[in-house]
Length: 158
Image (cartoon, rainbow, N blue to C red; front, side, top):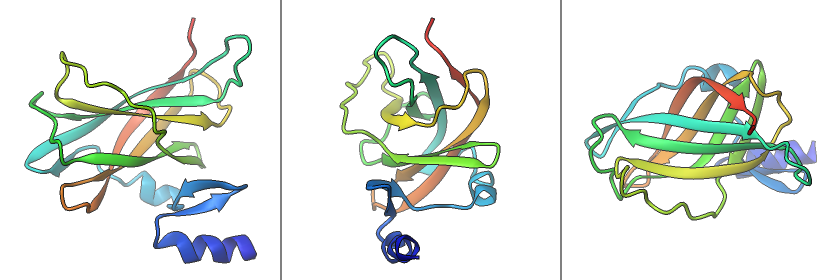
C-alpha cells in the first residue's frame, strides 16, 4: 500500500521506485499498444528502430539491453531540440520500463537523421521473442510524446 501511494504521488513527476530503482510511470499495456508508430515533432516525421539483445558472454548478467534509435522518416537532420528519456518494452502482457542510461552515444556522421539511447538491466526474456517498444520523446517545448515500434526481435550475440 505504501509503495502504491508513493508511485501515485510521484506519478506526476513521471516515475516511481520499484525495489529502490527509479522507473518511469506505469502505463497500462492496452494504452502502450495503442501508441502510434510515427510521430510529427518539430516539423519532422519520426519513427523508432531498435536493437535489443541479451548478452550471454561469460561473466555477464545476461539481462536485456536495448539500443533505441529515433529517426527522421525522410533521412533529414534530426532536430537538436528533440530528446528521449524513457522506454517501455511489452512482451505479451508483461511490461519492463526504464530510464535511458547516461551513456553518451556519439553522433554518427553517416546517420545525422537519428538519435540513439541505451537502456540496460532488462528482464530475462528469451532471444527470438517479439516485443513492442515504446519511447517517451520530448519536443523543443519539453512536451512529452510516445512513439512505438512493433514486433521487435530480441537477439543474442553470436
